Amino acid sequence: MNKNEDKIRCPWCLNDPIYIKYHDEQWGLPVHDELKHFEFLTLETFQAGLSWITMLRKRDNFAKAFSNFEPEKIVKYDDKKINELLNDKGIIRNKLKIESTIKNAKVFLKIQQKFGSFDNFIWSFTGGKQIVHQNHDDKQIPVYNDLAEKISRELKKEGFSFIGPTIVYAHIQAIGIVNDHIVTCFRYEEVQRGIGTIIE
Image 1: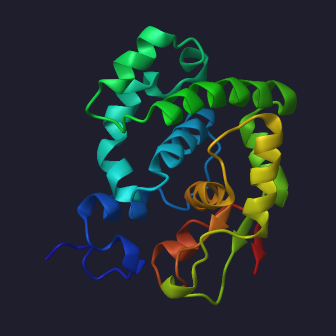
Image 2 (image 1 turned 45 degrees about the vertical axis):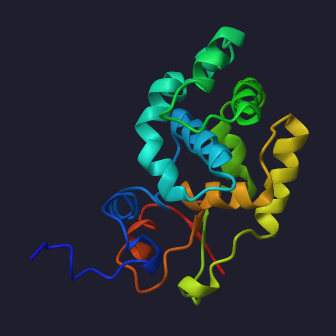
């Protein structure tokens, strides 16, 4: 028997080993790495209208296609590169989202200069603390909240596109600003270690 089979997990991840690995190792764990921030933002932008498992399956392809998510390189993409991406079967070939990613890379760099880092900016909304939901289960997890709406407005003000509150909420879940593991999940307490929390 796999030693992990007896662990209680969030039900949404149980139908695919890729989902389980992502859930067990990344989802909800506080992120402070700049490239990881931009990677998640890019994948979440392309995920709009699709399932997250689709993005996880194409994650390596996206990394290769988008210069390992380095915004300094992405801002230099020209029409030739855009056409190359539009012919890349390993990613989601959506011209608006590709062009948005290039634009967002420019804004990402601007935010880094303005706030010292994107990490400083995104974590400032909770004072560097993680919001922990104590009493919800998998059926109660929202698709967005007031915080996501606030961050979305600020990102749009800075110039981001494809960044509505649902995408922002997915981002703050992924990077650990919000802990949306159900309380019985073995990761619920693990992702809180070493970080201040706000209980809701």
